Image (cartoon, rainbow, N blue to C red; front, side):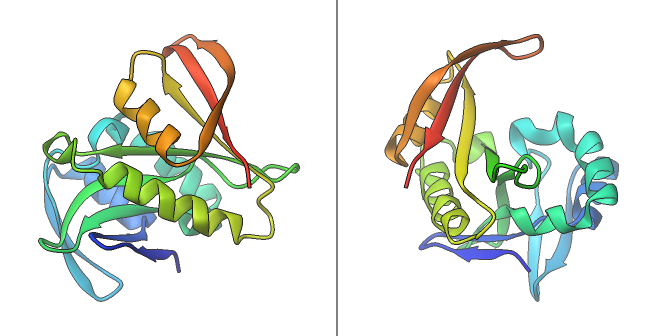
Length: 172
């Protein structure tokens, strides 16, 4: 079961049950790994539009639940974000990470704290040989998070939905 602990966050496995519950309700409370966690209406930040597709992916790939989690603020037991891999490692061992935080906690360093923990965990997984990420060119905050976490720019690409993206890679 996926779980990471940082100084201010618990990163708890995102289950299909929680994803489905969020699709049906704006806010709720759920018990995750023995902890009662409050999910406010702003959770999971920018990731909500992809939750329907993600729920379908988790139905077909239940083991993917072990590759990401809900960012829970320790002090309040409130879900403040979502992060993880955008799928299982491919045949070459590449994973792409993604993350998003509730707007109310932007600027507190939670994204950097969580990405550092995820990257450290990923490098401990035998299947992982390369870690990638993408950010929109204009998303300066996300770019700064990746830089602080040791990612380097590998190039750019154009996405029909998201526009110009910077492609990042983390190296051991």
